[in-house]
Length: 302
Figure 1: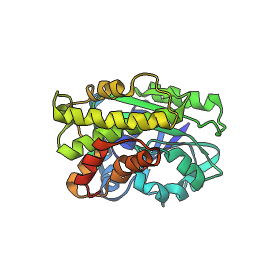
Figure 2: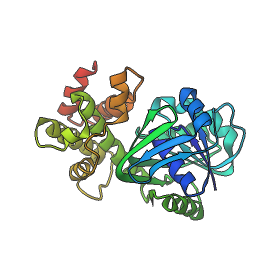
Figure 3: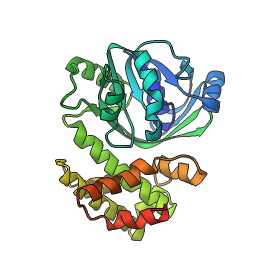
């Protein structure tokens, strides 16, 4: 398999680096100073799982890429999805699979509508990773879990799914093939929404959410409200969703923050629409009471 990583930020850069360290065939799509630094000095990785590495990985802009890829990991932010559809169409052959790894729910089906002739799966990831400097990725802690799978209407061979899983596992990534990717992507959306919104609302790292008190109570309130939305949508939870969110948050590096929180603090474009306002809109559409989400939304102009 050869892999194309569309978006070499904290998530995409970590996937690319881990695959490369295991000897896999990887090309990265990046831009600006980040791309220039990767071309000049290689991709530098600071990893809680892999240590310190500098990796020479082929990298180019989306416009420059002229190859074909067996697997395309889409790791851009939710607001940039439309911008990479032409890349997917050019890079795909008849057996290519596209695996979106985004925080925003419904991305796989959205991309499938944009590129109807390509096999698009869906996926989600649990990792703390970010661009710490141009050409430099930091992966914090010991969590690196990637879940992916096909929606019921999507035809893809089991052999392909298992080959990707094997490559990821050989790279040190905990890779799981989902039997219900709609459920798993909703669970991830609900978690990252509660995490990012709580962190941004109080402007604190995750260590503050791990302590008893009002900050943790806000995280719990958000988790309870998104859990009820999931039930209205028919999500069948394998375990209590609030307990699950707490278990995940308590495993994070206490110094970590969500990318949405970092972007808001820097005045950059962020995923606040997908992680906060889309959750509110969906809850309202399904008659779910969301007092905690309404409280935090006031700070962000809604």
